[in-house]
Image 1 (cartoon, helix red, strand yellow):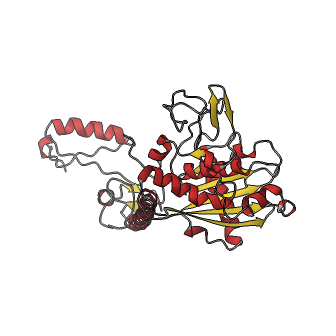
Image 2 (image 1 turned 180 degrees about the vertical axis):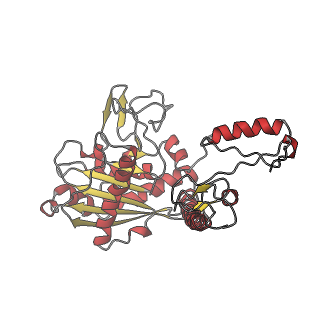
Image 3 (image 1 turned 180 degrees about the horizontal axis):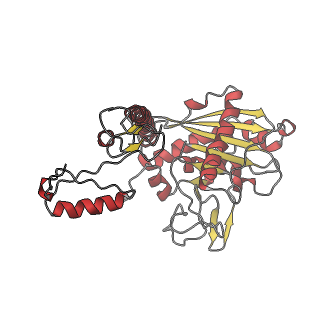
Length: 368
C-alpha cells in the first residue's frame, strides 16, 4: 500500500481504447520490447453480456453477425475468423452441406445427361456412317382446301413404275442408286416411308426474328422442329423410328417456296416447303433430296449470292471437256449448269446426281 513499487514488479499493464487499430499498433511496439501482449475485445453493443454466450468463462470479443449473441475469440477461431456463434456456424455449415449435396446431385444428373447424349450421338453417327439401313420418313401436311392440289396428286398418285423420278416413290431407288454408284454396295441402304398428306392448317412458330438474343435463337431453333414433330405424333406417325425426318408442307403461292426449306444434321431433320402452284414435281423432289443431304451432313455447293453452282464442288462432272453444258444437276446445287451464267431446273430426279464433295461429307467415300 505505502510501499514504493518498482515498474519491474508490475505483473500487468492494461490499456483501454475504442480503436482496434490503435490497440494492434501498441501491441506491436510492446512485443518488440519483449512484452507479452493480449488484446481482448469487449462487446460493441450495450445490453450485451461481457461474456461469451457459448463459453461463459470467456470475455466476449464480438457479437455474432447473424444473431447478435456475444462471442469470444475462440468462437471466431472455430468459425475460421468469422464472427459467428456455435449455433449460427452449425446452421451455415448445414446449409453449405445441403448446397454441396444439391450441386453434386445436379452434377451427377448432368454427367448422366452428357452420357445419354454421347450415346445418342454415337449411335446416330454409327447408323449413318456404317452400313445399317437409313430410314427416311416423308411426313406431308397440307391445308384441307389444298389437299386436292395437282402437285400433291402428281407426287403421291403418279405411275407405279416411275423410271424418270417424278413421284415420291422414286426417292428410295434414287438414293440407293447413288449410294451404290459411290460405294459399290448394292444393298438397299435407304428406305423411304411416305405418310400423309395430313389435313392441317399450319401455324408454325417463327424460326427467326430480328433482335433475338442467342438464347432466344437457340430456343426458336429447338421449338420449330418440335412443332412439326408434335403434328406428326398427333397424326399417329412413329417419328422416332426414322433416321431422317422430312416434314413436307404444301401451301402458299410464292414463286419459290423451296427457298424457305431447311435441313439440319442436328436431329437429322428437314423441312421442305412446296408451293401449291408448283408445276414441276421433279423440282419438289430435288428440294427433298437436297434437304436430306443437309440432314446427313452435306453442305450447299451453290453460291449464296447468285444461287449458281460453284465449280468444282457443285458440278457432277467437274472435269468434262467442254465443261458446259453439264448433263446433271448436283444434289446440293439443285440446278443444271448450262453456261457460266445460265442454269435450268431438272425435269426428273434422274437428272440429279450426288457430287463428290457431298458424297464425302455424308461418309460414302473418303475425303482423299
